[in-house]
Amino acid sequence: MAFDDGCPDGPVLVVGSVAYDSVRTPFGERTEALGGSASYASVSASFFAPVRLVAVVGEDFAPSHVERLGQRDIDLAGLQRAPGKTFRWSCYYEYDLSQAHTTATELNVFESFRPELPSNHRDTPYIFLSNIDPTLQLSVLDQMRHPKLVVCDTMNFWIENAREKLLEVLARCDVALMNDAEARQLCEEPNLIAAGRKLLNMGPGTVIIKKGEHGAVMMSHDSYFTAPGYPLEEIRDPTGAGDTFAGGLVGYLARCGKADEETLRRAVITGSVMASFTVEDFSLNRLFNLSHEEVAERYREIMAMTRFGGL
Image (cartoon, rainbow, N blue to C red; front, side, top):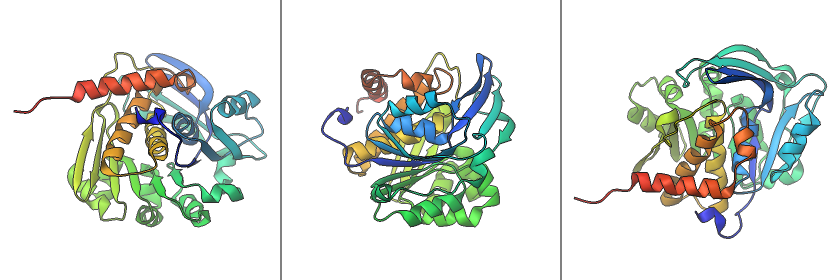
């Protein structure tokens, strides 16, 4: 894989949530495990490029989790510690692991989170804005000087409750990520290809629609690419898979220093590879115990699975 060659073009700025998740699936249960969109995306991206994490935690956030994140190539200068408790989220999954059933959301210190970037963070060339309030995403963009590439994500809550601000974010990003249900909801379009075309008309040059275990679709105005999901025999916890995908994607682009069609396609496959590891265990356990060699091997396996000859 290309990430083994040379140095990254620059660090990646990841802005989002760091949380404690309590998750139950048919295959086990974990209480108050490290989670949050920024945690998954940062650790995933750190396999390919240095990361600058911007988030907020409470006074109860364990020093061991700070240490664990710091053991990766992640700058924690932007990790704010505020009076109060860390954001908490609880859910359960049935055998349809594509659907999380939320049982509790406690925003705590995240409710008043206002991203304030350290001065040196404002020159970061690659940005991933996770699925936080579009108003906060716009605030981050307003603090940046000359970003090279902006990748943004969203979720159904913001589509329903902050649509106009979300459209402003989409007009200012280069790559828009969302899952298939969110794309259909935002575009009011049942057909994913038609929804992708509408998303492109909202501003981003590239749209990537995540389809869970079925991979992802990437579209631009003049190209179309579909990537498979890696076929896994055992999935323990799908939490954070989409954020891991995004981190792998933007980290790979930062590693390569370009975002042409070929590199974007490889980045989508890289994101799919990283997400496939996350779901093999709860929380970030698999990512923390993952090697570059395992990532490269699974990337090669997907290449082999999708190769075919001509007529």
